[in-house]
Amino acid sequence: MTSFEEFGFSEGLLKSIEDKGYREPSPIQRESIPAILSGKDILATAQTGTGKTAAFVLPILQKLIQQERPEGKRPIKALILIPTRELALQVGQSVNAYAAHVPIKQATIFGGVNAKPQIKALSRSVDILVATPGRLFDLSEQKALSLSEVEFLVLDEADRMLDMGFIQDIVRILKMIPEKRQSLLFSATFSPEIKELTKDVLTSPVEVKVASDNAVAENLDQHLYFLKKSNKAQLLMYLMSSGNWEQVLIFTRTKYGADHLYEKLQDNHIPAVVIHGKKTQVVRNKALAQFKKKAVKVLVATDVAARGLDIKELPHVVNFDVPNVPEDYVHRVGRTGRAGLSGHAVTLTCDEEVLFINRIERLTQSKMKVCYDKKFSIKIDINEDGDYVTCEPEVEVKPPKPKKKKAVMPPPLKKKKSKVKKVKMQNPMEDLYKNPFHKPAKKGKSKGKK
Image 1 (tube, one colour):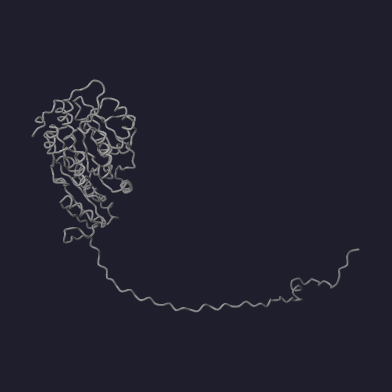
Image 2 (image 1 turned 60 degrees about the vertical axis):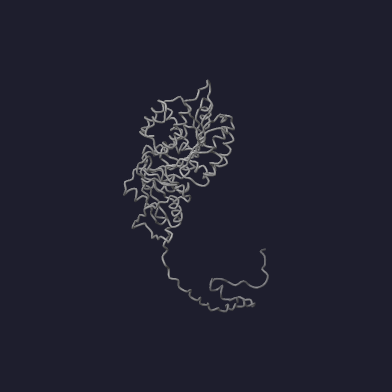
């Protein structure tokens, strides 16, 4: 397929595709769309930024358009399950854009915000529901929605769902929807856990791969720095200023690390925003909007908060902390170099993170370019297996000197206190010396006045 017209899409969908500026289908779209239109289950592995959202939304919209439309409130026909709030909001916006010229309605529900507007939206006709598991269960228990007539199930970012511990939630959701359905599973990485999940979700799926498992984009420059942990912030500031970076997404491993780096950027007068799990959804949405509009230069984020972010033409991604889960590296650097554009990923590594780098390179089957900075870089070596190892400086080990025994001095003798009482001798001339006019009193009884 070399054009979207060949898929047999309606005029309304073709108009929406034209509005988005798409000229020809991407590889994941060429492989997935015909299989979905034919009613087959899909297991698709594709790098982020390859157009996989359109790969499942467009054919679902086409199939819904072809169905008869009942009078009154229409039931939910398609459920798109998403791991995070930001990604749910993003996918919901994409569905709205693709359905702009067709009579299909969607609703997006996720936690962290007031549920009343979402309940109100569900009270009207909803053909496609984009949801995170937690809010889906909440509103289902409140009888605000029903999944009894779902015909299409999409698990997007399935690998992240497993990483976040949603496996039991997925099993629970499968019991809430009809067994007879079309299921589509999309993942950026392909692990043994994903293969196991397909047994419960998919039936005789068509496997679609547009890249090798867990690969990164070929148009992505990966630069690696080895340095002391205490020097990471300084090197980051230097790279940003010397390279004149205008927009950069920085990943940290923890919420505390994100806040700490944000404060350092503020101290250096670098406009930045931060998002992580402790921030409210309103604050996170506002920060993301500022970054997309380039009102700020830096977005500091944790993995969970930034999962699935779609930022057009993002030039730089920095791994301030190396992810301890290798698959997270693929997702992080997938924010840049999207849709065939060139990208740049920088990873700052201290000695305690070298092991993580070795795991990442084995997973992606690619080597990052090691960069050296005179001021900050530390020496690194490569062992026989091709893994990086830190070079600890050789220290001459001297035998310990024998400890000198201190001379033990006998305790000082205590002086015994004399039991003889000191008697003060009275000097008869003492009073005379004090007062020469003093007359000593006569001995005997004193006579009283008459």
